[in-house]
Amino acid sequence: DNIVGKIFVPMPPSNVTFSTDGTTMLMYILTATSYNYLSKIDMATFAIVAQIPMPKTILTNGFVLTPDNRYALSTSAWSSDPVNSLTIVDVQTMQMVAQGPVGRTPVSVALSSDGTRAFVANYASSSVSVIDLSLRAVVAELVLPGHPYRVRSSVGGGSVWALCDSNDGLAVIDAGSLLSTAMVALPGITVPKNDIVFRGDKRLAVATATVG
Image (tube, rainbow, N blue to C red; front, side, top):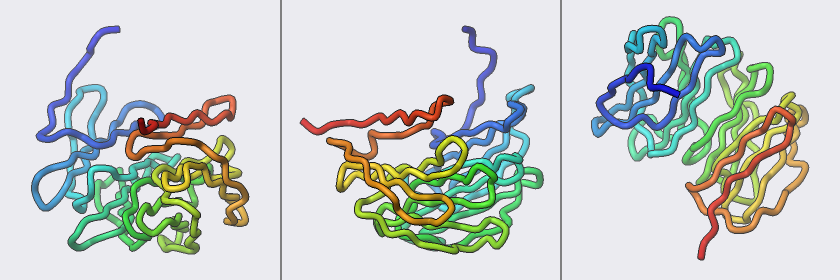
């Protein structure tokens, strides 16, 4: 493989995602100023075509693009306003269209398979906030036995899985009833060195770091 282009940004990006057709990349950039930035990049020219300021956040933030490529969702948690929030950006206009409160220290976000709901993992409050994206409001707050650090939707969207570090396990949430249905034990989870991803065959891959 060859390097076909480079994109220069002022500070290290914390997250990137691509449109489904691969023509656009969205990059979340951390800065040392009062704001971070969301950059929209044309993958044909590798040029930044639009950029907007985003709320300040801790190093780890959740960042996803809706299935129709229309909206980008990002979490933010900091010691100043707006704190503990989910921000929604219209990718076509690159304008912030909504921002609302979630639980304490939101660090990850996942979407339902149809893109109508967002699930936000709130590390400090040991919960997952469920947001109805048509209402742009929290419709449920699910308390978990551990501190969720990653949240992912299953293939097909029937369940949501949250990786928790305090009790070394995976919490399984029914996406329909919004009830926690199971807890899968995983030894030695150490944040932030862990992640989960669903493979195409519907199996769940878990990367963990152990202590000692």
